Length: 417
Image (cartoon, rainbow, N blue to C red):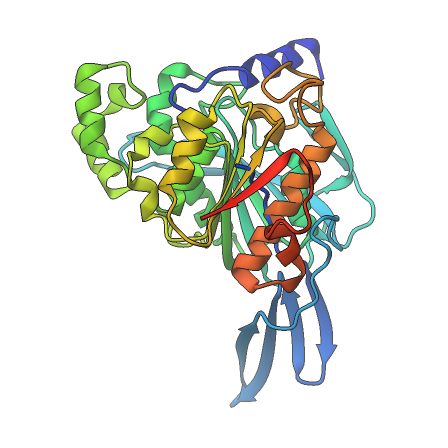
């Protein structure tokens, strides 16, 4: 990476997100194995068995699909999955509701592949991944989808350890660069609009991925299972997509007192109606917010509207979205009995990104006083995968991880409702 680009990345990763900020570990669903059987093709995807029975009637072929999550073999959650990882990008252009101009976002996509060699992937001209192959051939079959939203001034690939982990376990992982809020184009004046644009970006991205043209190698491979995740501002985005509602009247009152509040400069009548409607995407089955920020925007009861299992990951030493400002209120607001909190006792805000591992910044998760990046990545990956597999498919192999009887680190705590 050129020195100027490295400096830009370091500066943008340390930009504060005003009003933004439990041990949490993620879970990832298992890979897809395809076997030929006498009854048809059986594809096991993330713990789901899909059997396609084909019959021919009057020259027409009809395929019936049935699914079950029982008695499936899951690869270890704390290890890379059985697949290689492919990578590519696409552009998505859409006109967001409430805005006059079209918006283009660049989307990174990780996916499972059986390829064993290929051109390596380089993230932001900084991180070379020799075993992540550009434009690799995707594994056939239907795969669950993992949507990731980067932090304020971040990039789609900022938590590549997590997105790669899910892809190796058979997931299609999609992550946009939120135009106007990335390391290369961040504009603080746009943050009020980003409260609305970020969840709209994810929904537009998913619409595109689920409707790729037949000529696209990934066309038809995105399945109905959808997990939403994100870091910091992306954690807010995740909670909004999962069904978090906004205390709009309180926002209006606060803006009368403090016009410099998070959304005040863009709180038009049309925007007020958008916030009242919310940004829930009904396709989301589970949420994994990582050190989310802007929790106050949901009010005291907004997160209680979320009806999907949620694993909240936070850090005790987080200085950007501190626990007392964001982490603790987020956990108090979540009400689903299936929810789980993972708190890194020696973690900071950037524990959940590659910034510490790349030596880009000091403090807030980076340095000798914090959990080492390699250990943190393993803990994040394992909890995330375990949580997803348990809540979605009842995977018995991860119970000891989630109930704390098999601790992954002595500096991480688990809290359940």
